[in-house]
Length: 322
Image (tube, rainbow, N blue to C red; front, side, top):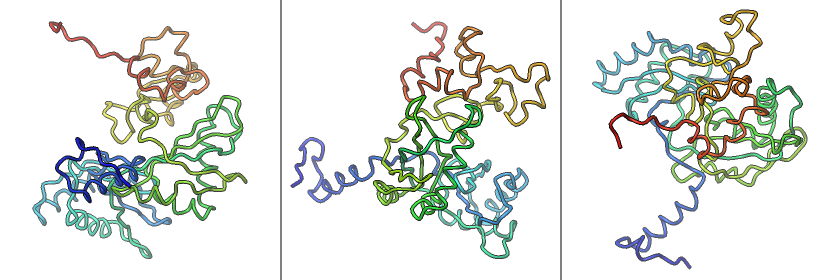
């Protein structure tokens, strides 16, 4: 029998109260976000269309068509990778008619002979974690990449993992259980409904990874602080990054890691400098490591301690304010 607190549900009918309670229990691993302000496109597996295909010219053309043909005020801004799809960002949640219109013209611009480009509806995000994943031996610099490749390969071979992989919203994040552990955990964000129905389908199920049955569990929304792969700072995803330019994870220079050896002098190519430790004004000998060095960087060690991360960059005081 459900006991209803009088103060919280005052004015609601009994059925409404029970419904509210059930939604709260079912969606504790689910959260809404600004990502609903976008259109998610899902090209077929063999399609050459990527986020880079949506150049400013293509985006501007779609905006002109939206304004002239359907009198829409929505303005598409940019395209980025979103899980296995392409995210076209917008300042507000697009209406179904606007989504259908954009999808029609995207299919016209990028014709597919077999399976046309599809659309994945956006509602909410559910947070899952997969535990006891076998650790892939690799250097600290290459571990995350190799672990991700092994993880995705295993998902695509598992009956449960195949369908889960199609719902992945952001690139999975990995953390070893301890520095000397032979296993790690993966945090997986998936597209979901308001009530978290997709998460309920997978929680408590198992995925076979490297010969080990790894259980899928529910995770708290934003259980850890997100690491931005663009500016290397913590607290936001690369899709929401507002930095003026990308930062190299190796030297914190104003370029991507892929262009590190192109823009850095050969004599200093092996010099490492953490973008976060530098911004936090740590001593020079405490910042001589890459931003993704999980063994040395204090930001990595405290990435699940939001209070600690926030204290590293205190708000600047404004003159005249007491």
